[in-house]
Image (tube, rainbow, N blue to C red; front, side, top):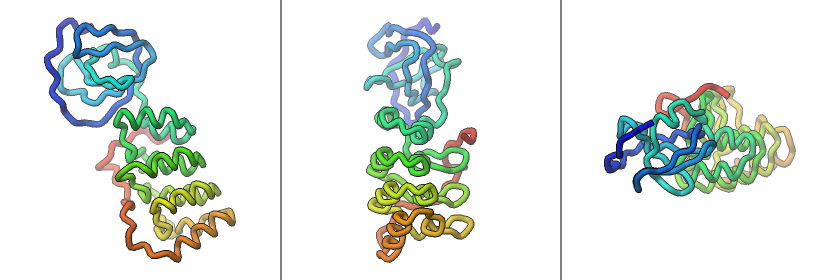
Length: 219
């Protein structure tokens, strides 16, 4: 256990890592943060102090002892897991704690891709409203969220993606556009109609590059 009063924290940007606390902890100064066993701690900086981490929990930010979380469960890619399972509340909690919605897993896919693949329209609606969301991001197979929704016959997701600027003309690395792999008539109709519209203002697409994004074990 840390046994010294932490110095005044210096803000430092970094990726957010999510840990599940193993023990209860009671803050000993106004710069520390109390938490209970099982709470999810959003660690925003792990390098400022030798024995302390900067974390967020319950709308608060403070320092927590490093040895209270160093052996704790690290929740890899929490947004991806929540998007697959349809856990809207956890998605919102992660976003409120600055977890990046554009993070990539080992396949190069975003949380939006998995929400579209699973047909969780409520999560798709939430994610596409985020500023600077990469709606037409391609994974390592060249597939976009629109490809995923079309392939799995989730016409509601197809419609939401198109309404928010998803590019229906992107081809995956097999040369297929979302229309080419759509398996239901409603998705095909939506994609065919969208393909006829001008695409001058599409600025959401990018190709995933795992060397620039943090990746984890393939799920």
